[in-house]
Length: 220
Image 1: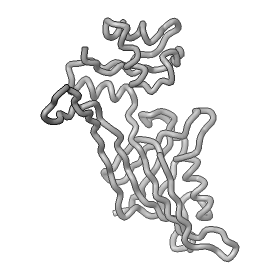
Image 2 (image 1 turned 60 degrees about the vertical axis):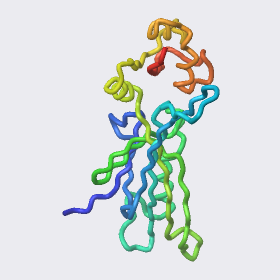
Image 3 (image 1 turned 30 degrees about the vertical axis):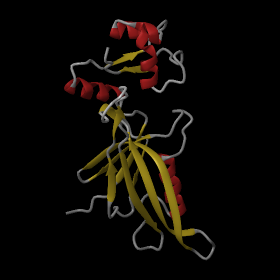
Image 4 (image 1 turned 180 degrees about the vertical axis):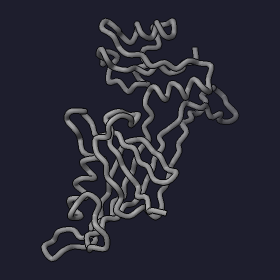
């Protein structure tokens, strides 16, 4: 059976479909990787409570952490690069660097065996531990942390499967305001502040035509 290397692909959209913006393979597959799944709860606040009731508030951040080794001693060729530094530069360009046309780093899709993960790179910690006589890196270890990202449409479908409360994604049109859109979705414009918070908006007016706004289930 042929050896399959861990692959990281870059995309412009959060659902990681369409044409890839770039691909890089691990030089050596990681010996281990770790997944962290978080669920957010808040404590009940009733007066005179005899105990704490934890109230579900949402699915939290899900992480993937792994270690990648780059070796320039000639054991095997470095994939897609001639030196350790060149490989790291390419990796950062695909997974980490800010792209002016998109106004953010790329979305990423990681595949290896049964693992399929879509998200963004939150951090890269690089340790250089072997050097050429001229000081250039001959070996490096990259500890990389990825954070899962779910696009709005997928999130809406997932919410509808498990809850009678409807989740909506709406595209902003000319003349739309959060208050107006909240009224159209919930029948009450007063929920616009909760919508702004759910979309991490800097202000309630920070929307423009073409933006996609996520309207979560709200308990009335």
